[in-house]
Image (cartoon, rainbow, N blue to C red; front, side, top):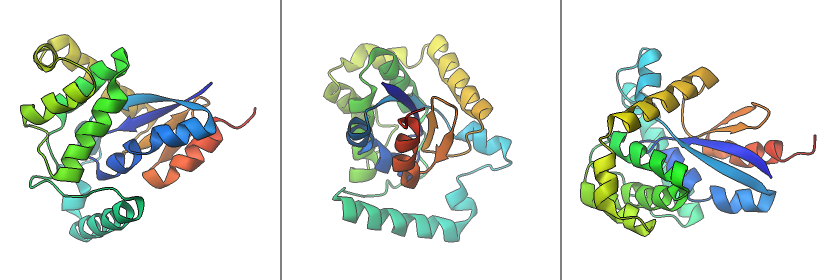
Length: 199
């Protein structure tokens, strides 16, 4: 089965849109999704940005919010912006990285995105993280403790460096097995079609 990497950031609104539909579409195309959480902060910093581009370019930020409102309404998804944006996604990404290694990242990721952008919840609220972990069938106590492990911190740094090496500059991004890159929720269908096309 063809594999397609899904690189996502919990502070990315468009990653929310993708996470809520990628598995259904991947099943239709006969693709296997590799869930790849990473951090956009270091990538933005390398581009000379010290904040989210939606704050650096307010007109773009206003457009993005309206765009996501329209898409969510069309797809029947709830949408509520958190009071703080962009949110600090470090701990959430570390937990998702464990989930990707242990095969429970999809449920955890969807649940956390739904809480963040569907209910306006805070990613820094450990009760919110714990709820998402339980939804994925995990015991929160040990995992929340593991999120502070220096080894795990380094693994997330390494994964973010891998994203940079691939040329990733935003989220969501999809990488097919032949190295083709597609950026944005609106390129998901194209990425899956490309990734599963006969050689």
